[in-house]
Length: 360
Image (tube, rainbow, N blue to C red; front, side, top):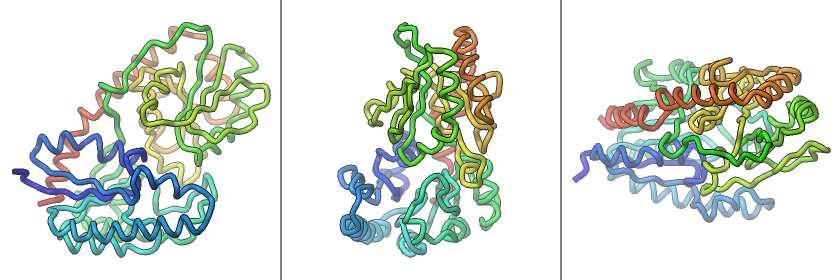
């Protein structure tokens, strides 16, 4: 018989990075600790893509269906020792569902890995007009434990928590047994890669002059953007590849260099450097903007390079493309750092202990 029962409330199905890496990958560790876990996304893997299609009627219908499912989750919460909410239980309005779930269970934990108290800056999100941006602070105040992905997020959480010891920093990590180095075909190309969502394509476009200049200086440089929205790259060689759950790891392993550009704004500073963790686990050197957790995750000059403007991006990529030994050394150092500090094996005990503490 399980010692505890936890109901995880997620905004997305397993295809969503937060759900996959901040809940699903910990389920075996919870089971081994005698904790029964149930994961309830707002929408299923089949229905979630419909939310991103044009058409108000479809969006309203899907939202109503998600609300009906959340009503069932409230009933299920009465049988749980803890309700663990990742980011939000419902995409708009105040914390009505979160309060109801807490009342049903008696215990609430809250988890977020972005600056969710701020409006989107990388794209125009119409849902932002319907969000309650004070909801995170209210949930932090109620939660027995608040789990965050970076020190900046932890600072915000501590300002609103009932006590600072209720805030736990757990980076978004990867299973370094699965995310591991793999040989890439020796075809003479230097593949500079990025992986993400279409909504974050603006981060690539902001540094595109530097990337294009690097490719002009070193014709071996090829860009591969996984999950990005295609744009006109001119004469620069770019492959836009759709993201798939099955191909995620292999796509990263196919890079020679990983990049993580970010603008220096309040929302981007809340990013947790997760792309860098994926790249490092796969033994890749990385180039990143010196923004938010990037400066903590990446060791400048050791596991990768920080680049601020177009000239920095051009110089960093040309330099790494022309120095295979430096790429190898940085990749090996990044892999070691990922295994020690940003792996599932390193963080699972902390996650289990946090769940147990929140459940009382």
